[in-house]
Length: 445
Image 1 (cartoon, rainbow, N blue to C red):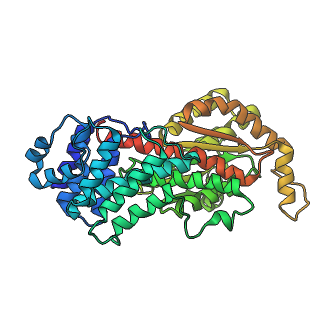
Image 2 (cartoon, rainbow, N blue to C red):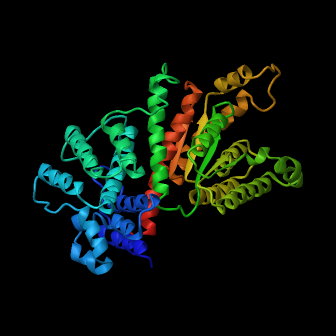
Image 3 (cartoon, one colour):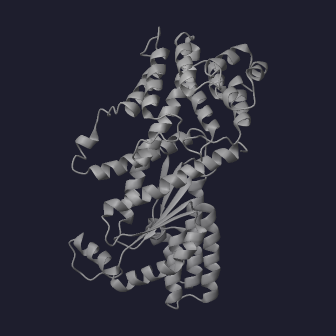
């Protein structure tokens, strides 16, 4: 085992279930590992990376610097000491002044550990504030003014007698400027693209911060299976546009994403399977289709995707089965047998279910207004839409109980642009929770 891996495991054991002050659902050791990973990213040697993983152990756990020296040697111990406050009995101001003065004359390797620690703390804090839409330092012992003083001063100490253009120092300076001095990005979209739509821009900034946080969590652990979002809904309620927007939203952030299109509109279903099962009973056809959509999803789950978006899959079949049952085309026993099967498969494979609907007249008006054709619709009509909405209402409680995260959106009086917003605000917290839980599970915490 390398010294880096050994240090990471030691930090996990030492910090255990300790939670962060600013975000209590996240673990202290997640910060420690992020610091070590950051040092490795910037090309630091193995001992510096190991010390990054261990930098909070002496301050925040039962282990002493002698324990670190015994396990990892004097070099790593000295590096950890350089990033540790010596006397916790002093006031906050006294401790920070001591750190500012001491760090000025430390060797560069020690300074880089302190730098990585501050970068991760401030970047996490910046994302928290962006998600909340406000700057709130109430969870800290000192407020914004003292925090600005401390981080600005520590930066000045770190670059003392050093090349301030080192990439890690530049990154620290950038986050200090953004958090404490409101430095804007070069492409300040708020004053250009969104000049007339500031409220929407603020919502997008929150989403961007949430997405960035999930990316950072993704660097700490890998999900045991891709994150799956199923979409269903009444026609002309914004479902397809929402799926395309979300695909683009995650793709541009670098997530490995798979979009599975609706099975019953696929070429395989229309040209092959539909003909094969045409003579089967409705019950048998539905069982075959259920098996096919399940197989379709399971095949995608065996690949190394981060996210799978699937259009009209397992739970959508349940809605159509309910319609068939209400129409008298499916027996009660068959319907409830299939419903139990759907529930089991869905709870195992689907992480988030999002369903859009609208009143029948709104859906039909949208269809006519978005096309040139005035002919009567053969399928998209008020009766069929009413049946779908009726089935959806009956199954709403079932979906709420069988899916970990479920969102039903009435788009009748909603700008369809906002449908994508609502969906993203539902998906990202669920992803965040899953990554944190997966990290705890992987590390037996």
